[in-house]
Image 1: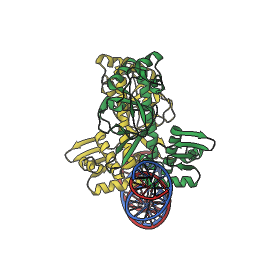
Image 2: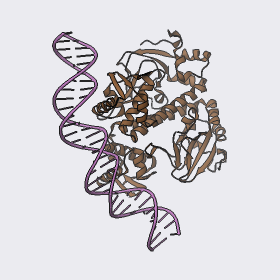
Image 3: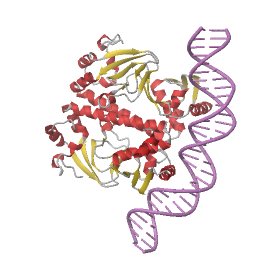
Image 4: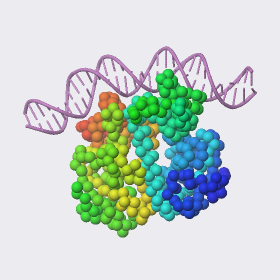
Length: 236
Length: 236
DNA sequence: TTTTCTCCTTGACTTAAATCACAGCAATCC
DNA sequence: GGATTGCTGTGATTTAAGTCAAGGAGAAAA
């Protein structure tokens, strides 16, 4: 447990990088920073376990985490991948109080914590932050609507292309040869994220590799041609 | 266009039935009511078209509506069914500004409208409403997470059972023989909602009927045994 | 380095859902 | 009321993904 106020942050005010607080003035930023605690997690460590009482809004400062549940069949279903600037826990602060999913660090992570009462304090004092939070939740809902649609209607090829494009946007580095994507999860994880069998994903990726749309450099790095993926995803 | 303030509402303050404003005192309720406009729509009428500029938060007062998109293949994908007390449009007010789905009245409807600027006014004046809105969005996200999981992992039988249970909860009337459910959409609509072929849904419903789990009284009315559906859905 | 373990790929087969085709029923319109 | 139109249910066939099983590559440990 290494909680320290954001004021002691080595790199200065870490929350200035968090979009949620972008509307705050420097002065208010400092005030909010004083309410924030920090915590670090090692790769593989649990941030939250399903069913836990959620006490704080968690904002990812560094590293990547996965949010997941176990299905009745015992499979792990990944719901979200969060990285720098993303936050979670908000839906459990004002409502159910219990986490409906587990969260685990995929890498060594550093997070900002804002407890329920302190968040309320911030929201009461800074309605603009509340509106930003509402907007962010709206964005997340829009994203889920897109995912929902791809799952509901589109073919698996399209879903995979969409996933790879998402990864490219979030974790990719553009170069002339294509986009180098540092995958946050294993093949098995990707399959779980898509809700398909691991073998099926392997086959599809092999097919994409035959068509020179992606190249698997190693298991955690992919070189993808975004333009061709966009064609596949129907976004051209 | 039949906009009238909620203050002129025949049945008194209609917004007192809207959970979003449940935290307001009688006095503030009256104040907010003055900011609200009303509108009615006939069955089949469009409330919003995809791509429209969204100007207002819409709260359903009476009737049911569907929110949907067209997929690239030309199929209609239903994203939500909204009925009394539900609201939509919030994600487009503080962000994209353009609707990402169309909304159409499934029955004659009456809605409350709160324009962006007036909603901001309310949120600034009543932080408690902002927090309630955040909580409601959190709830919706949780629901979507559940849907997401069922689609991603569970079998179609489970998904159908889950859908019927949702319908039973929202539109059902419990009786000793079972729950009478007034379906808001056609078989084709249900298939689109689930993202499966119409024929597949028919077959599954026939199977459920053979097993006396559901009985189709007419195309818009189902008699379902909720307990047996819960077994199927793995909620027992 | 070699061993071991885990994760990934590929092939053969099975299963579930999509598609195609058609017939029956219901609602609506004259 | 009869006819048109659109929605719904069922059978036959095709296709895509799941499952089972075996082999292979990479990473960590000895």
